Structures are given as C-alpha cells and as structure tokens.
Image (cartoon, rainbow, N blue to C red; front, side, top):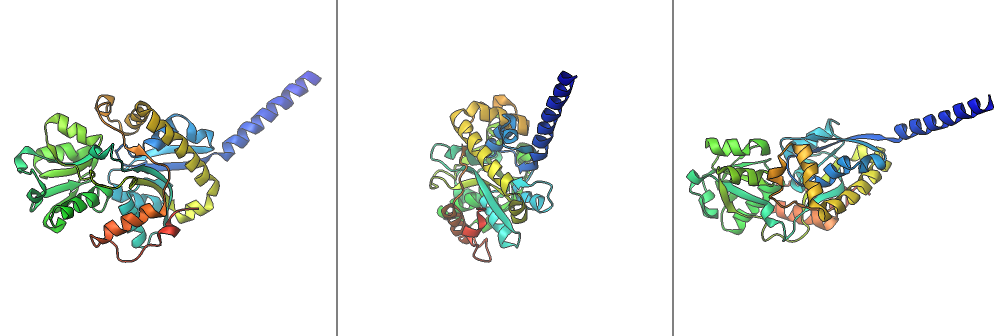
Length: 311
C-alpha cells in the first residue's frame, strides 16, 4: 500500500512539474519576411532554444516588411522583424513600438547579399539609367528601398525620378519577367533565384559602401506587450543570442532553418551567403538610420532613439 501511495505521490509531483512548466511557457508569434535576416529566430525555433527558455514560439511569413507594424498592433504577431526604416516611420507615425533585440546587420563580407536586379530589356546598366524606370521594392520605406535610394543619391540621381512600386519577395521573379517592372530591389535568397532563372542581372550592389553593423532587420514589439512581458523579452533575447552564434558559426544550420520557414529550396540557399546575425541593438545604430532617413525627408519628428530600445 505504501509503495502504491509513493508511486501515486511521485506521479503527482511529476505531473505538477509538467503542468508548471507548461504554464510557464509564454506564447509568442514572430513575423518575418522571406529573407535570411531572421535566421536567428528560425534556428531558435528549430533547435528548441525558445522552448528551453520558456517560450512557446511560432513563426509567420509576412509578405511585405511594411505590414509588420500593423501586425504587431493587431497582436497577430507579438514580435516582428521590421527594417529600422519601417520601425522608425511607424514610431514617427504614432505607433508605440520598441526594439527588443537585433536580428541582422551590414558587413563588408556580405554586401553582395542584396542588390538591384534589372531585366535585360530595361537597358539599365548604371545609376542614371534608373531615371523614369519602374522599380519593385519589398516595402516602400523599408531597408532595401531606403538604401537603394541612398545609393542613387550618392551617385547623383534623385530617387523621386524613379517610380517605386511594392512587390513581395516571392513574386519578384514573375513580376520582373512579365515586364511589370524594369528592376527589383531585392536580397538573398530571392536574388539568386532571379539570376539563376535568367530573368535579370545585378545592376548594382547598393550595400557595398555602408558602414559595418548597420541594422538590416531588428526584432520589435509594442511597448505595451514588452512592458507586460519582461520575462518573455529576456527569454527572447537570450534565445536570439544563442541562436545568432549558431547561425554565424554554422551557416548550413541557418540555411536549413530558413528553408523550413520560407519553403525556399535548399539548392538555392546553399549557393548564397547568409546575413550576419547580430543580436545587439544600440542607440548609435538607430541614430545612423535617423540621419539616413532625414536625408530623404522620411521623418516628420525627431525620434527619441534611446527610448526606443526596451531595457
């Protein structure tokens, strides 16, 4: 009888511990676009790092980066991967968002992971050839479009003379092939797919002269969610730091996680570099983005960048 009671008691303790563990799991949905910039989140999900740190995480593929702030506001995702420009414009427009971690940043070793790809029929060879052309971008005001515009300015071309339209990453190849646009501002892994298909060729690498460690994607949430879930923010940061190290040291694992998230074939991903995973986000990095955006008159106010990073 005593043995039965002990066994029952032991089972109850185990069940209670499992129940407590389940209760401790905070549910988060993470929204990212189809690039390699959220590789740290993809690896953290695939390797069980989020779960180990008490997060019941899922990931959702979002077509346009500019849709991420709205997804955060509606609580359809709790953490998203906006570009700094989309993040800052959303804050400038009145949304109370905060950066909770870094995702990826620029590096001299990976400048060729993004570029502007033009169709053969466009006749585009150099910056001045973009005047009067229609260029597709994965979000007006997003990282790629803003830095492509900076590249045009640095080469004496007014971006206002270029017709920008929004084109999602998955549809870029078909949109360019159909002639609906003359070029697309794109990044890996889509860039390699477009080039491999013969639809277009690189007409410029606009990240080539950027400073090191300029954020390409950051992880953000609403301030209300971050304030209400400090332990989840801490667990998310710890998970991203651990996963970022894996991505940078073992790119193949990062590629596989991205393939599983985006459904892009591994034979495409295997031929390209991954963005540098950079889990830190600092005020100086956001200040650089504010300066870059002000050059293009993209902000109405003066963001308090120190207050935009969740403590």
